[in-house]
Length: 374
Image 1 (cartoon, rainbow, N blue to C red):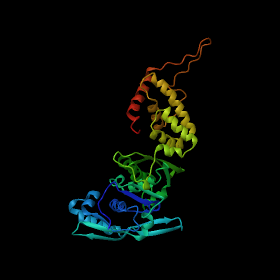
Image 2 (spheres, one colour):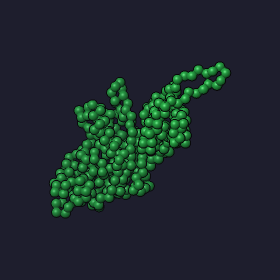
Image 3 (cartoon, one colour):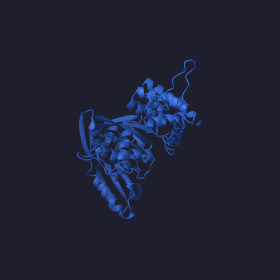
Image 4 (cartoon, rainbow, N blue to C red):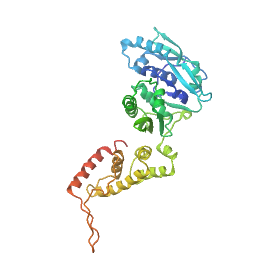
């Protein structure tokens, strides 16, 4: 019998196959399964009976004290009838099995005893490669089962910095039935955007995403994955170490992208996260010519802006320019063309009061937003 004490810093370690399995659990069922997985030890050779106490269930699931016994008993019973579908690449087949082989609720002792189905052993025991590991605390406070699943799918590709899914495949993994969220915008509003907000607020991951279309229809989505280190999160044991520094992610990219990453930090004073977003989102979306043209534009704009406000920051200008996807104008302040005199050098046009007011307005916005996403 495995110890049932819940520790939010315990590791959840699962094979990538089970990570990508097709299944649908309620939020509370998902958290019970993850709590069980967090009790598995790296040297376990077989499943044990995994025990979770009723008081810990109450704290974990937010169940009202008066309802705790009936609610937890129902969760345990329902889990016995929930299945998952795992693709087995070595045999090109699908395994369909249940999560639990048994559940036992001890009414007078204040705990439940749950056992994993033996068919899940290859996906939860003795894992040496192709697994995903994270601390339980990263997902235990999430309010959507879709947020938990998306977190796991992105955690799996954390080192690579991005992951792409066809919409139909992502819906299948998340257990979304045919006919649900048929309109992409509903899927985006009810699944993707809430997960984006929750992960950024409560976990060690955040993401941006780009949509891929055929005609007007969105057919795929690409997640751009970013990591933030939790202050209270210690290092994960070496056997389960998963790292994702921006330097490591950029190191897997082309020579041009690596050079751009350095230039954005040294010349344009952007943070690593901001530089990484420009490379993985805007370079991909808009192309190299747009990025280089806009960077040159930002440099010249900065020189003009310094004449209006000596505190104008090149990083602020560059970040706002990309976030708002500025279109490069023929000249920075649209001055009236001045014909050069025959015997004199060309006199540059003066900045008008209207120009100054417009730039001051933009500078005010920069000061509010420049470090917001850093």
